[in-house]
Every structure is written in C-alpha cells, then in structure tokens.
Length: 127
Image (cartoon, rainbow, N blue to C red):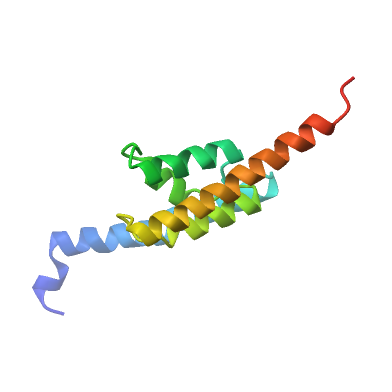
C-alpha cells in the first residue's frame, strides 16, 4: 500500500463504512423485526374514496407536489386498492391519451369498490 491509500479522507470513508455495516444495519434489521413481531404495519390504510381522489387529481393534472410520490411509494393495506396503485405505477408520466384512458379505467374500478362498500354498509342492521 502506498501513502495515498491511507490518507485521512480514505481512513474516514473506511471508518464510516465499518460503522454503517457493523452498527446501523443491524439496528435497522432489529427495528424491522420488532415492527413485524408487534404487528406494526407501514402500509397506508386508504379508503376507496382517497384512492379515487388521487386518481382524479392525476387525470385532471391538479395533483400537488408530493401526491405522486405519496401514492406510488406507499403500499396500501387493502389488496384491491394496492393492486390499483401498482397498475397506476406502470402508466408512463406525463400521461398520454392511452395512459389517461388506463387511469380512467382504474378510477372507475375504485369508484365501483366505493359503491359496493357503501351498499354493504347500508345493508348492515343498525342497533
């Protein structure tokens, strides 16, 4: 090894790598395991109405700065709604007419889920 390889900068980089690999990564793994053991779920608990609102904003072009990131990167607890989210991710942005039609199809599906949910709630007996 020559003297360049042991410069203070390189020593700091090596030390940081060791700290990350020996300390931080295991802590993150332990935290993730604890979340699993205690039933902490990092998926969003979105309703069909919330998903429909996101889709309408994307179709109309009225979404806010972080809406796309919030919608695409956070899984949804409801598997049907998460399936819609995953399908939306496959649409290339900015949306062309084909993408807009696909998003409209997804919106119709979500609105159908919302209506079915409302119908089921209306049929439940009230005490």
